[in-house]
Each structure stands twice: as structure tokens, then as C-alpha cells.
Amino acid sequence: MAKQASNPREISWALVAGAILACTPASAERNPISALESLAEKGDPKAQYHLGMMYLTGTSVEQDQERAVEYFKMAAELGDPLASYKLGCFYDGQYDLFDANHDLALQYKLIAAEAGYALAQQDVAGLYYRRDDFESALVWLERAVAQGTAGALSTYASIHNGAPGIAKNPVKTAAYFRLFLQRAGGSDVQRKWLADFERKMTDAQREQAFAIVKGYQPEPSSLTIEALAGARAAETLIEDSL
Image 1 (cartoon, rainbow, N blue to C red):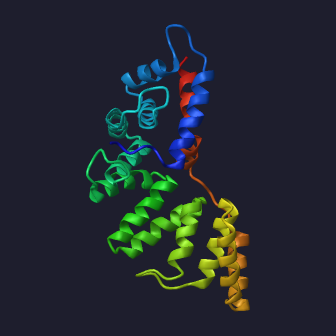
Image 2: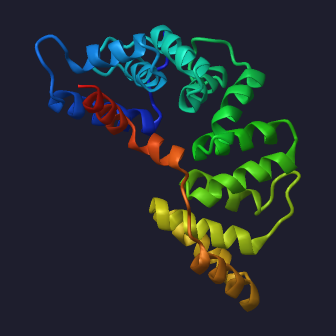
Image 3: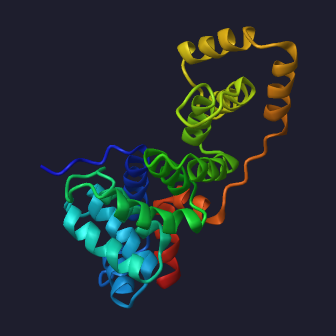
């Protein structure tokens, strides 16, 4: 049985898409799905990517991972980095359509990471870390941190509290975990953990951590913003084609 979409981004994409497609102008001859299909047939990689997402999430069509992959492959071949990222997710074992192939996962996700997609940068960091390439892992994780993704902030804080190949740094652990809590909310347990951790730090370390938090200004890339827009980007694509 195929794995169902459990990624919060995919769930959000599906919910937003459902609302958008219900409200998108359409003639009797041209509904939103057929508009995307028409664009896809003409070689529009963004339309192909969004159709892939629809089949992946089962939005306005019957869920079909194989069809999703077909569209992602079309879009990736035409240079769409978000489609490459989704292919990387399939090869990374996030779905059971293919056997996990971490070399291919890295190959596809690296395309999106180099194009500036924060989530891909975070994933690429993890793939390099599993290869014990700690230097490359840190480079990519820091790029994701600079864009403000909560998962990257949490991971960055965690690895500096003790991880193979990474030097302990309580200042970075405290600062970036606080930034994570500011962006993600966090739980009472997490906030208590940070308070206890900070009490064990020196005054100088706490001041350094505070300075990092105060000066932090995330700058998401245009591709990250596009990915976060999700189905709203499909809406714009459809409206521009009508």
C-alpha cells in the first residue's frame, strides 16, 4: 500500500488547493485541472509540478503516486527544482513507490538545494551527515538556517549540543533553539529544557546567545517563498493562462 501524504507541507498544499480550485474562474470548456493539463502538455514545468502535487496529495484527482512521479520527472527534466526535490523525496524513502536510493535522493535534492530551496538544503545536510561528511552537512544546514526554517534551527541547535563530528557549542545550542521556539512555538517541555540549559551557561555565554538571537534576520529565497505559496502559485499560473 502506498504511503499517504503525512508531510505538513503536503497536507497544507492539499487543503489550500481544494479551496483555490473551487474558486478559480473556469468556463464550461476549461476547468482548473484541464487548464493545468493543457499547460503541462505545452511543456510548462510549473504546471507539470503542480499536477504532480495534485496526484501526490489526491487533490481534485484520484491519488496516484505513479502519475505524480511522471509529472515530477517531466518538470525536473525541464529544470523545475521543486519537482527535482519531490523526486528526491521518493528516492529518500519518504514513499514506498521505489526502494530507497540515497545517492539518487542526494542528486535530486541537491538540484533544489543549489537553487535555494531551504527544505532541500536541510535534507541535503542530513544526507551528507549520514555519509559522515560533516563539513558539507554544516554548510547546507547553515544555508537553511539562514532562511529561517524551524526544522533547520532545531537541528542546528541539537547538533551543537553533542553530535558525532560536530564540536559542542552551548552558545549556538541556546541561541538557535530559542530561535526555533520563537518560530515554531514549541512545547512547555521544550521551553523548560531551554531554561534549564541556559541556567548552566556562564553570563558571557548567555550574552553571546542573546546577541545571536537579537541579530538574527532570516532571508528566505524566492524559491522557498514559491514553495511555501504552494497551491496559490498554481492559482496564479491558471489565472495567467485564462
